[in-house]
Length: 389
Ligand code: NZQ
Ligand code: ZN
Image (cartoon, rainbow, N blue to C red):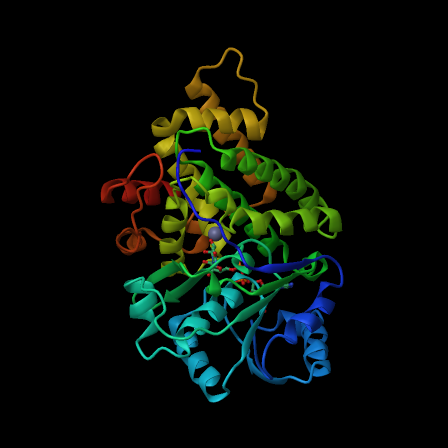
C-alpha cells in the first residue's frame, strides 16, 4: 500500500435476527424527541414499523414522523423535513428504510440548524456543515447502498435534472448505530433485491478498478465480490434463503464503509454516469449502474489491463493459460455480463425510460472524476450513454 490514510468508523452495528431489541440500549443515549423517518409504506405492511414503534414507546420517547421519503429523495422533500425537525426540537433522527431514507436523514442532520440553502451548500458547493448536526440512527430494510455505515448522502433536484452525492468528511454524519436484521429484507421485491446486489458489486468495482500498487484493499475486495456472486446465485433461486440474504447484507455494509477505499484513488465513474441517468429518469439506482457498466468498463479496459485480467482470474476463476492479458480482461467482463443477466438486471437505459433526447442533459449532469484508469471527456461520456441506450 503506497498511500497514506486515516481510518475511523464509529458506526455501531447490531446484526442478526431480532437485532431491533438492541435499539432499546441505543435509545437511552439520546433525549426524548425522536424523529422517525421512513419511506412509502413498506414498513407498515411488513410489520417493521410496529416493531420499531413498540421499542420507542417502551423507551418513553416522544415520536414525530416524516413518512413518504421517496426512492431518490428530492430537495423539496428535504426542505419539508427541515421545517418539521426544527419545530420538534429533534434529539435523534431514526431512519427506518433503505439508502434513500438513510441518505435523507443525513441530509436532514446537516441542515436542521443550518440557515443556508442545503442544496447549494452541500450538493453544489460540497461544503462541510458549519452548524450543529443531529445524530442519526438506522434500521436497515433494503440492502445495497452501504448508507448504514458511511457518511454519504445522495439528493435529487428534479428541476435542475441533477442527482448529487456528498460524502461528508466528518464521521459524526455516519449513523451512530445501525440495526441490521437480514430477516427485515425478505419482503423486498425481487427487482429491488437484485438492484441492491448489483449496487454492492459495483461499489466494490469502483474502488478496485484504480491504482497499480499491491494493496490489501484489493484482496479484501476480491473476497467480497466472490461472496456477493456466490450468495446472489442462491438468493435469485430462493429469495427466502436467510443465509444468502445475511451474507448479502453484510457484504453491502463492507463494500462501502470506507475500508476497501483505503490506500486507493478510487474510480466512481459508473456512479457518476448512473446518477446522471437517474436524475433524468428517476430510475432505481442499482439498475442505472447495471445499464452503463459494460459500455463503461469496455471503454476503459485497455487503460487498466493488468487489473481487469486480475479481476478475471481472482473473481471469476478464469484460467489464464493460453490467453493474452487482453483476452483475460475481456473474458472477465464477459463473465460479469453473464452473471448480471442471470440476476435479471436491466442491461440498458432505454428500458429505464431514457431516450436519445435526454443524452445532452445526461452528459451535462455527469461529474467527471479522475481517480480511475481513464479520465473521460464529454465526447466519450456521450458515446458511453449512446452505447447504454
Ligand atoms: O418506500 P418504501 O415503501 O419503504 O419502499 C422501498 C422503496 O420503494 C422498498 N423497500 C425498502 N425496504 C423494503 C422495501 N420493500 C419491501 N420490503 C422491505 N423490507 O425498496 C424501494 C427502494 O428503496 P431505496 O431506499 O430507494 O433503495 P436503496 O437502498 O437502493 O437506496 C437508493 C438511494 O441511495 C443512494 C441512491 O443514489 C439512491 O438515491 N445511494 C446512496 C449511497 C450512500 N449513501 O453511500 C451510495 C449509493 O451508491 C447510492 O448512490
Ligand atoms: Zn451505489
